[in-house]
Length: 430
Ligand SMILES: Cc1ncc(COP(=O)(O)O)c(C=O)c1O
Image (spheres, rainbow, N blue to C red):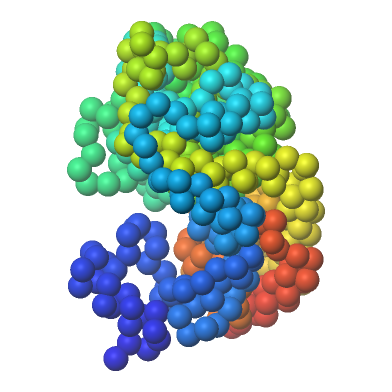
């Protein structure tokens, strides 16, 4: 007999769903399944509630089941979920809003996931430049497809070496993707020089949130911009995490560095499947959505009513800036509070993150490039996260997973979470 209702459901699921889950990283230890989410709270199958910082890997930014988003989605779908011809008024309004807010975007197309968005952006870069290679960064995750699924959370012996993350990847695709060190401009420059005339694009998370918490050094993004211009390749900011979460203009608006192409996802529709690729008109019009375009762009579900309505509702709720001020304030309090807890415990901690994101790592600083992340004490990290979950604070019990603050979190939530963090750390240290 399974110990909990969650374990029992996962056992039952495993008969008809391989491993019992629909995405590889949903298996957690302890096993937990939720039946309801509301605001910043999740309720598991036993009825226990948790303050949620997992936020579905950051897709839920305004809080679970936000009434304004839900009502707008319901109002949209009663008139039909999908027509598959032409465009809807809501799709046009959404595009106009994204163009208004994201500085480098003159035109935008939507799809359903961040992986689709990075796939389409890379194909466009290849189509426009006539080149095949791309550059990504060790420790960055840019989606599940063969173009980018290499050198994400590599083990120490494979850092910077050939490290495809899955069986079944096309060797030619893996080898067409070159891997550089985050924050190492010299590495990028020499890679572009060695491959002069072959690199279509440099793609990166402008903050390396999947490592997590690699902030770009001053000058890194601007240096990439210059290097791409000199070498005639496109700069792609993968803002699937940073877009809307750090501001409606994405991290590019805060950094003052504009990419050629931007990918958006996750927080832009508060948990509904919406993602986007945007850029200047002359590039975007190469998609076959135009009569003369030559870069294929397709997708049955693109621009479906539910996702588009959720995106429009989310933008509407973010436009006055108060949500961003709120989550940045709480994020700052959380990061400082966790640092103090580490100090009081007398152990080395480094708290990564930016804005609404945070991660408590058990290591000395700095946290600048992927090799730094490898110093984290993974066993302590996992024990700490499990102790947190036992205390009703849901940070994903997964190595190096970042945690997310959203609009629904409050100051008392942060107080309670810091208290739980101190107790959890004491228990984890034994
Ligand atoms: C920066 C980044 N890009 C792309 C993706 C892929 O997005 P999706 O899981 O929606 O395909 C992710 C997902 O975690 C991401 O963090």
